[in-house]
Image (cartoon, rainbow over all chains, first blue to last red; front, side):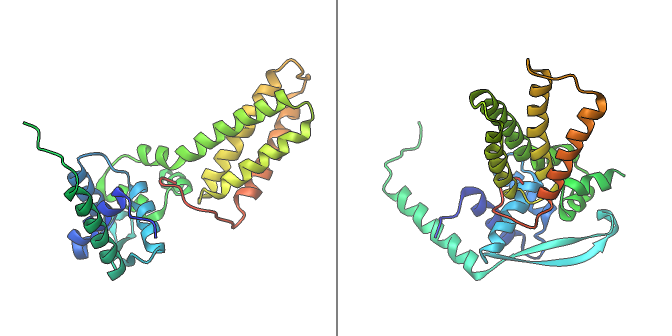
Length: 106
Length: 136
């Protein structure tokens, strides 16, 4: 099982934080706010598609809206397997930080 | 018209998101085509290199085989065709401007490039898929 990458973790956390409002535009805005860098829709959807293929997220279609030119939103939801992988990633990261003698800069 | 062109490169979800957020599409299009452009330039360089190193013309088929495999990594028809035609055009320009170039008429160039476009279109429309690149 390949560990989750940094961007994959960020996307999963953004989807969890957004809850029922997690779709392309809101996920991208959340990622740009949290990561403090520009994020493309292409990168967001490529990551979400990969996570969906792995069974870590699921998606559903909303109603078409005029603001989107009659296109429906694609909402994402993190599955139990996705939450478990995130928890595993956090434990692994904490274990590494715990043995690293890194001091705060003065 | 603009949305029809965008549909060639971007998914419906991304086009909808761009419209809703009011962000420009240029960056998304460039990101979507970046792997195709990079592989296409690399393929063109490889075709030129193999034509210089190996005297037998059939060796370019090996490079085209590698290009065809590279196309499997791209999910959209337009990206695949961009890769194939960019490599072909780079190689073609090198041949057309090279020391052994013949004197071809405009039609002579047109049907050769047209034939490559048809081959590229057929290869690009094959329902095969290897994997997805991060931005593709």
